Image (cartoon, rainbow, N blue to C red):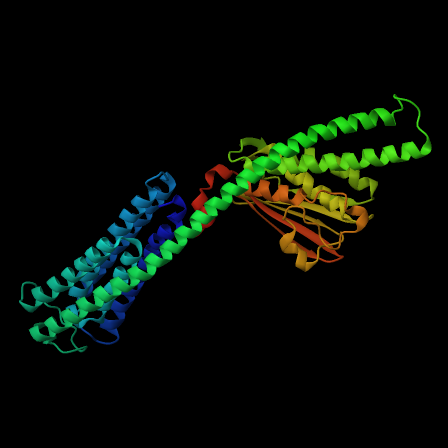
Length: 456
């Protein structure tokens, strides 16, 4: 089974741990209510002790699961399955003991055993599912027979039901038969449904892997082609520059105009190819070189050329960087590109005499950046597409359509590589704000915590 199926098993293991916290609270609360409000006789001290044991076991399960996920490896699925198996077995034993001290088969809690059978059949093989069901039935049968034949004492729920029910062998055999048939039916149906679901998931994962492989091949092809095109464009620019400089001879006005047009268009195409090459490299690059650097130095380096461009358009630029942000870990070269692209966009789409604000705040193990401008804004229907490759907003005027449409795609790729998040809000014709959250150390954030931030 592929490693991409891990989250399904993590979900069940996490569900067990979460539901157990609730079960512990309900167990203690119901024990108190039943005895003190309803006057039903119950062995409260053993049940409180079992609640403490269950609490300790749940802490142990959470620690074991966390270590398994962090350790990773090729056997992580098998280890998670073993942990779930351990959880189910301990739960069934504790549940049987609780049942014993709270009325035995007289207690409706007997039905709770079915939940564990369903979960077991959704994770394990058919044989293992029936083994879990058989173990459950064995525990219930032993409890019923041991109490019926006075091997162990019976703790009756006085005031709740028939006090002699546990001694009625006819009732025990008939109820046991129905209970066993129901257990087999539950396991069979749930296993069949879950098996079909897992097969569908496996098909989806295989298809997704095939698409990822095709995407990788496409990116490699684009990388080679754009690299070759970049070389040819550099040669064309060199030749045009020679002609424009009149080294090869004088030019008349018409020749000079067409030469300048060709040079400008080729220069734009060169920038476009460079951006496409840059984005493709980032998509193919799996392991970034992270290092520690002073964040404020990076911002100071980025902001100098931005302020020059803003000054030419009479745009006011306000900067605030939280002084508590010192050294962070990341790739300073790509992060410099990220901030440059976002600020250049803000200058580009903000009309003269507008204003731009860059705010960076410290928040626990992340830094939160907001870049807002008083520019042309983005239509609501375009907000979900701005990070798509080659996409240009519908309200961008013709004279500003000189970009490649790859800037925000590159930004999104850099944010993803740093395990961060980015989103844009805007009001058409009034303002645009880009917000991004970057971890101070991406290497300390495991992949599963991104998929399941509330796992622990």
